[in-house]
Figure: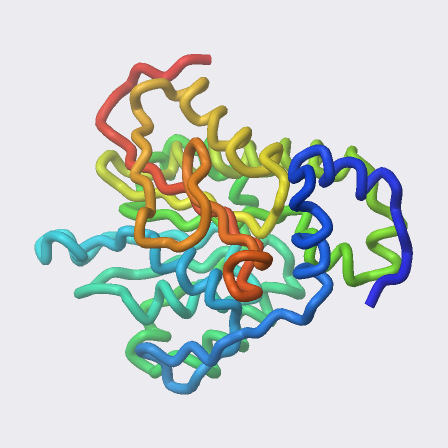
Amino acid sequence: MANTVNAEFETYYRNIYGERWPALRESLLRPSAPVPYAEGLAKPYLLDYASVLAAKSLRLPGADNAADAGGEILDACAAPGGKTLVIASAMHGNSRLLANEISAERRRRLADVLDAHLDREKRARVTVSGFDAAAQGGRKSEQCRYAAIFLDAPCSSERHVIQSEKYLSEWTPARPRFLAGRQWALLSSAFLLLAPGGSLVYATCALSPEENDAVAARLFKKYGGAAVIDAPDFIEGEKTEFGRIILPDVCEGMGPMYVARFTKILSTDYTD
């Protein structure tokens, strides 16, 4: 447990959450309570139930129309693999899942998780890859390829920061600004990779609107009417402008988890 006090960190999040911040901070310092997720798996996998809800919010091909059950799904930043398992266990028909992770070390861990928790049939329908998801959307041959995309973007992960002496002492306001830039590159790329009519979920475990709604807002600024909000109303937590956020001080220790869901409609009216 971190005993370090970082004045910049405290000021930054107090400015966002005001009088709520002390209670929220205290909830972040408590250990999380992962649940054994087992639906459709060969054996259970422990993960925060907020992560289960985030992964389940992706509209999978074939969920509404069996004729669409053969579409490709992309988990753009898949490691360590918990949310990938949730998606893989819920695939319909002949759908296939590409579980992507740019880090070689994390990719090996991802493959091990999939091998251990998916049955043979489901594992055969999941491929592990290692491309840069932020650049992939620039490849014309890949654009409009995927029927559904889940983007669990690298983020500030304040729950881990606040529990680590090292990470908390190193934190500056530049961290969320830097990560928001990377998150936008990933989200913009994912939107280009998404097929018209497809579902896109943008998720983080960040507290800051700078990494959440502010990133989602850029989708509409750049792509205009091609993106439509598809709010995941079944997710508990608090409404934001573009999605929902699950915070541990009011959700029995779950989270943090921000989830925004979009649908891409057929349009070429993209702004620069």
